[in-house]
Length: 338
Image 1 (cartoon, rainbow, N blue to C red):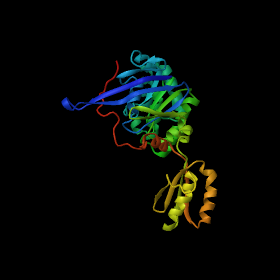
Image 2 (cartoon, helix red, strand yellow; image 1 turned 90 degrees about the horizontal axis):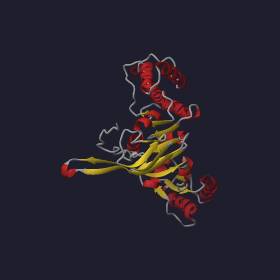
Image 3 (cartoon, rainbow, N blue to C red; image 1 turned 45 degrees about the horizontal axis):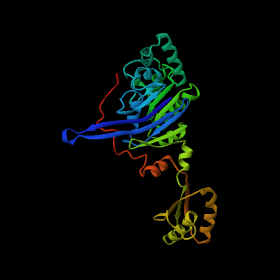
Image 4 (cartoon, rainbow, N blue to C red; image 1 turned 180 degrees about the horizontal axis):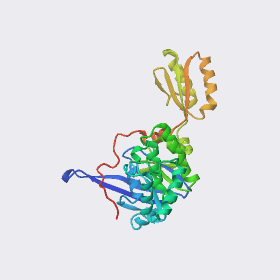
């Protein structure tokens, strides 16, 4: 459904002698198969949004090739646009128009008859729990309702492939959970392929069949969430001991699980907390507790934390997925393909 090879996007910042080339996307290879839900992750500045704009024909690639729904994004941009649904982060509805009118007009722009657009729009309103809102203006809707309306706009023409750009940004937890159900239904009920960009790690974990991680313009990982987590070296065991003089003893006992007797490499201490990553922690923690008890170590708490997607990214790149200090592709020109 999506195939990209060597995709590159460069921008220029500054003027004159201060001009600097920024390679926002640096040779991306990407495959998305029909029926997949793919989560596209990366911190701000990683090239995530720039890649999405190239795949949706909003930005011409500097180099490389990409086909979307069987069409080249440069030479067949019109066919690409007719084949995809795109739900942008900022939304696409006019706040002062009736929701139903917006949806019907959008469908007619795709060549649908008014009658077909009305029928399809009302079906989607029912499926996305927007019943009774056909004659309501978006400015009078809740945040969750407006985002579901954006999804209706993206689906009105029955696209084979749907791009969702940060679909739940700004929503409260209840609205996010509700929209998750509808995103899952895009494939189960409608048979769509979904390409989802998000900053929310739990969102990708729940929704995506496969996760693609981009950093500094390059794909650094692509696999299922479980397989990516398995690459991290074990579960994090966090011991909180009761007294200062017990920290060293606890560190030695925990280190023995990682490196054998006398090994403390990889064991971190922070006040009364002693931490290390341990393979198959669930199997060995009971024995560790007995060992600590025999050594006279009293624990205030113990926590075993399974690896997260943020741990995966940290292990791959040395920084957190939650790092949002920079902006994605600064000073990007608003180039749109004809």
